[in-house]
Image (cartoon, rainbow, N blue to C red; front, side, top):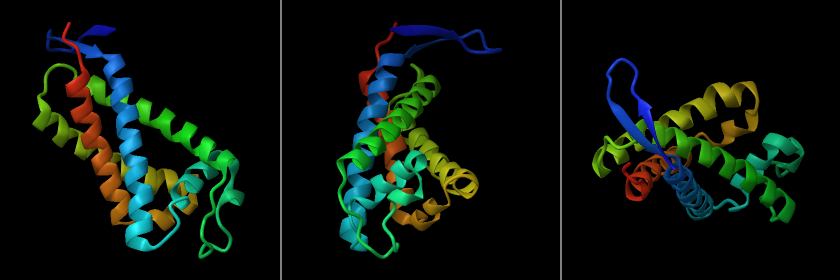
Length: 168
């Protein structure tokens, strides 16, 4: 499933293992969600179900958010499933982008560093221009936990891709 890509203007061939990109995104998505839910609960004393509800609200609307915002978020299977579908689709997309960037030219350290930087960029784009335009409730989660979880997500994508890729 590796594909050779001619790098524009350089004449070099890079092999992208798209399968490894999918798996890297899924692995990083699991790590991210567990980290986000756990840290919100441990460090902020909030319900671990709040982050999935914020994600599900992207398609289900603000009505799935706890009202008032101080009210603890309760578990709901439908909301959780919606959130996980959205989250893992985005995780796979970001994993494929990571695969295209890393390809076969980076080792673990470089891929982890670049991935961490990409995770920070994902946070900044999602929590500022996109949130401001489409999902204003994400402003509630502009904090160190969200930043940290996104940086770890990117680092895990980089590490997982390097560990899973096949040369070809």
